[in-house]
Length: 587
Image (cartoon, rainbow, N blue to C red; front, side, top):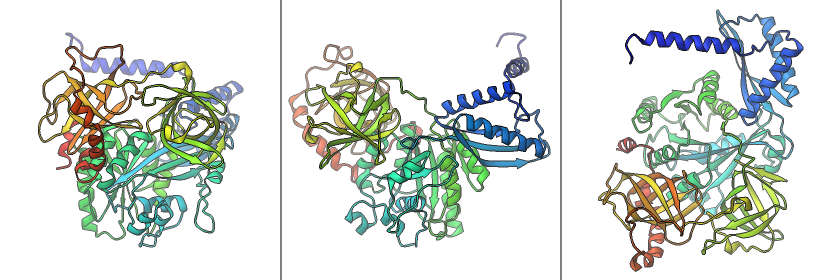
C-alpha cells in the first residue's frame, strides 16, 4: 500500500461515493406520491420484475431514514398494490415486523401469467436410500400426511417393483404449483391422482421435483438426473435416525461439483430420539462448514427464517436446514413457504438461436415420435424447423415441430430455461434419436466433435492415470465413454489438476466450451470443464498422440457396458466435489 494511505481513509472514501450514488438515485415515495413519483415506482417494479424472471420481494420501511407510522405503512401498501396492478401482478404479504426504529413489511410481487404460461423451477431431490425422499414429495404434492408405513410414496412410484421394494429406481417427476398470491394449487382427485394440466392452468409458478434414486445401484441414473435435467436447486434429504451415511456424501459432492445450490431437509424427526437428532445435526454442520463445502448452515425454525433464507439463497453461501416430519406435519409449512419464495435469478436468453437438449424419447400412438428435454436458450414455436443431431456420422437433419407440451399442458412455444415435450413430424423414427442429441436453430450451423480439451481435477483414484485411460463422461444429457488421448503431464493422481484431450468412443456429440463434465469409472471421480472443442480440421495439442489403437476401439463396447454396470458397488465413487478438500468430508 502507498505511503500515507490508510484503510480508514479508503473506507471513508468508499462511504462518500456510496452516499453520493444514493443521493443521486431517485427516491421511491410510497406515501401519497405525485403522478411523477408513481410513474417512477411503476418503472422500478417493471425493472425488478424483469430481473427476477416474473417475481420479486419488495420491502417497505427498511431504509435508515424511514420511520413509518401504522397509517403511513398502510398508505404505502395501498400505493404498492396500485403499482403492482399496473404491471399485471399480484402482491402477498410474506413478512412484517415492528421495532423501535422501523415499521416494516415485505411483499411478494408475482406476475399474473397467461393461462398457458408459468414460471418454472426444477429441484433435484437426492439423498441416501430410505431417507424419505419419495414420502416427502407425496406429502408436499398431494397435501396429505403419511401414515408412517409409506402410504404417501405409493402416489409417486412409477413401477411395480418400486411399490414392492419401496425404493425409487428411475427418475420420477412431480409438480407443486403456486398461484400469484402464493397459494398451493395442487388439488388431488377423489382417487388421489393429480391433474397436471389443471395445476399448470391455475398456477403462476410450478416447481418440478426430480425424484432421484438413493440406492448406489442406481447411481448412474442419479448422475444423469443432475447433469441432463439441469436442476436449479438440489434438496438433500437426511434421515434424522440414520445420519449422514451411504450416498448422502456422494450426492452432496456431485451437487457442489456442478454448482447447484443445495438446501437440506432432515426427516423422521418424530421417531428420532433427541440425542440422536442432535448428533446428526452436529455432523451435518461440520460437513457443511468443511473446506470442501464452505457453506453457512442455517436452521429454519420460523417463517422469518424461511424468508431470509429464500431471498439470500442464490447469491450467498447460506445452506438452509429444515427439520420436518412427514407423519405429524411439523415444519412442512416452513418448507412450503421457502419453496414459494425460491427464485432461480437466471438471465433470460430468449433472443439467442434456439437450442433444445433431448433427455428422453417416446412414441405416442396417433401422434408419432415425441422428444422431451430442456430449452437451453432461444424459443421454439409450433411449425418451426430445427436441425436434429448429431447422428453416428456427425450429421444433422431438418425436422419440423408439430406440437409442444409443457408439463402435459399444450402450448404454442417453449422458451429458454423451460422443459418441454416436442412432437415431431413423421420423417423421424424414435430409433434414430438417442439421449444427448440436440435440436438447434439452423442459424447456429452446428458441428459435431469427436475430441475436446478439458481442464479436470482428479478427486480420487487408487493408482495413476495416463494416456488412453477410459471413463464414462457425463456432460449435460450426453453420457458416453471417452478416453484420454493426450495430457500435458505423463501421469496424474488423486488431487492433481491437468489439461487433457479426450476422444469419444461411440458417437460424435454437440458440446459447448465451458460446459461442466463429470468422469466416473470404478472408484475414480473427476470433474472439470471443457476449454476447447477440436474439430476434424484442427490439431489437438502439441505432440498429440497418434491414431487410436485397435484394442482401445475394440474395447469400447465392453468399457461402456462395464461403466453402466459399475453404477453398482464400483460406481459409488461417482459423487464428486468442487474441491479436493471435499474428499476429506466422506472419511
